[in-house]
Image (tube, rainbow, N blue to C red; front, side, top):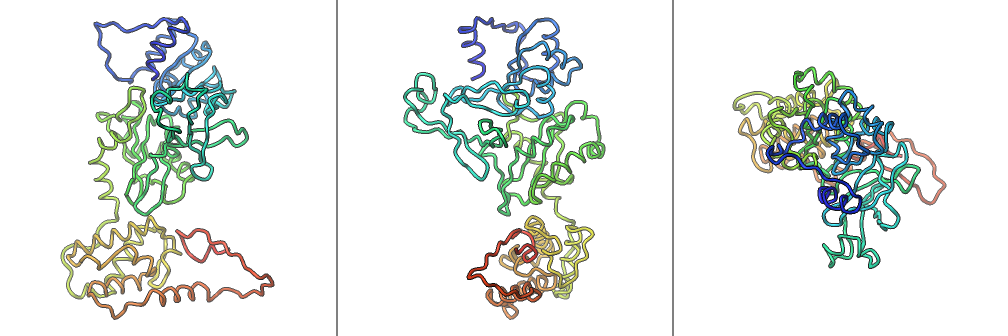
Length: 457
């Protein structure tokens, strides 16, 4: 769409001149080095504005004289992807920074020129009659409806005349104090669903990490996996650094970013992949990262990291019959817990969720137990499931139940109702009774994916 506007519409209506490269020198199709090219053009030609993809702006702003060059421009226009906050803030001091919003289906949605400091927000022209429909709490989807008085200028009418409404799939959040301003949050189809049922917004973490000057792009991965992986592409100057050097430089950024997310959405350094210089991220013609294609490119490395992300196997070779007893299973479980919860003292009868185990680590613990049982040829379908960890939240009861399941014995099975009653008694025995004069008592339960009992209000 941008190419059609620049090479066809702008010359017709604004008298601009289109300049093409020499036909004897085929284009490389690569955007690498385009920042230095922009800088050289601005040194030789007096321009009023730039209309380029964000990735080129990012490269240009790393050139030594880019800030002085930006002061000679009226505005810089970008679209097709996000511009990092630090780059946009730096550029906003020198000229207007504007965005383009649109798609092949609907054409371009007219936006108002942002005021200083608001460059990262979109402000649709009221005449566009954009409908921001609630998608989730605090998040809205941009929707357009067919309107006869807009048919003459909207591509939607010509491309999809049978559709009464068009849902963009773009999710936005309103400005905290300016309701007409909207910031891009994520694509509805980009949300990651972990195997434990938690949802992660990848765009928020990717944008936060990409603010580091060493990072050119980031992709969060984890669909149907127990935990996310962060795939990073570094700028050329970072390719010479070893992994431990990158860790030292990126460590504070990773810590600050993780603080913004719930525990299940956090990424530690062990789950970070650094892209190889010989395998750059797959990018669209506009310079944006093609998520699916890039993930496919790094699929072997991703699967290898997931396979080694579990704590080391506990023991080797087949077990003897004596190893099936609960005592040995207790040792196996405790060793895994010490690796998952370093520094925590976990006794046999301690509630492991109160000690810090969450749904993510419970999934990992379940995978560890199942893997070790497989390694010792004692696992059979139905003998273990991750749900057992929630039903038997102590090392002693979990080991005993796994042992009984391995023997296919039902003698130690306790009914669900009796087990629930036992849990209620264990968590309520120390509660103080209060006289309540109200007819009703209201209780709020929070943190149900963590430890039950500590957050009863």
